[in-house]
Amino acid sequence: MSGWDPTTLPSQAGRTIVVTGAGRGVGYFTAEQLAVAGARVIITTRGDATRALECLRRAAPGADVSAVTLDVASLASIRAAAPQLAALGPIDVLINNAGKTSGSKRREVTVDGLEIMVGTNALGPFALTALLWPALADDARIISLGSLSTRLAKADLTDLQGERRYSLSRAYALSKHLMHAFSFELDRRLRASGSHRMSLLAHPGFALDGSASRRPGVTDLASPAQRFGERLLRPMAHGKDRGAWPVVRAATDPDATGGEFYGPRRNVTGRPVLTTPVAQSADAAFGAEFWRLAEQATGVTFTV
Image 1 (tube, rainbow, N blue to C red):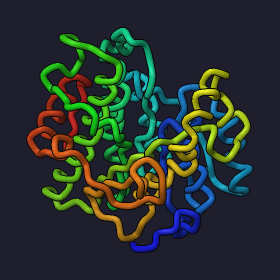
Image 2: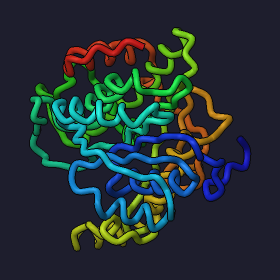
Image 3: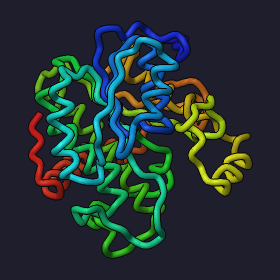
Image 4: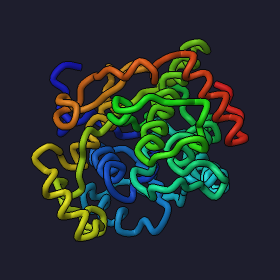
């Protein structure tokens, strides 16, 4: 759709949308914008969702919003949350937003022994999507969160767990390559099966809490050092409310088709437009191999 206006969305009345990791950041603003458009929104958070729900209800009076506890870094948590989310379906849009962007310089693992970036940002969403598959509407959209970091480093599937050589930045980039690969491979499998479901990808650009509209208890959780750093970066970034725009477009644009990738017009900031992934992330062999490794690592079989 040309001239897409992120501030005037198509009505989402009658749609049920799940947004993971929506207690703050891009996830919160994605949920807010969809709730304002009339969707029934279910957010997931690792901890207490009270403040996020309060802000959502303030922004969208009368909206149907609720929360389910979920930690995508834990396969046990995913298995516990999936039936709760499924019971609220059918789910029209699943937005795999939850993830991890920072951590220790030393290699860390999840409770399941998976490298923490890959386990949280790629393997967890893979398992959740697989377990929710029967609860998705026939024309559901699955939105995965991508990143510009895939342009900065190549992915090595032979060292998925970062055991041979490790750096935090490389692990994060790998996890996002894998999320891209998941989205594109899911699209290929959906097309091959003749499904009406769609898999799309979106990235928020360079988005900061401090540049977003203020939401008490949601946008003001950064440390003083983080807030200082954000002030220095503001000229080259936008707020996380605008960072949500590509995700929301992927979820709501009636002209969207499976396999599309949305991001800010100027790469790091701007209105949401179609963008091009790096070749490795979109490669069919790369995607198929990730799928195999993901099933192996999570113990979850995902048949489309």
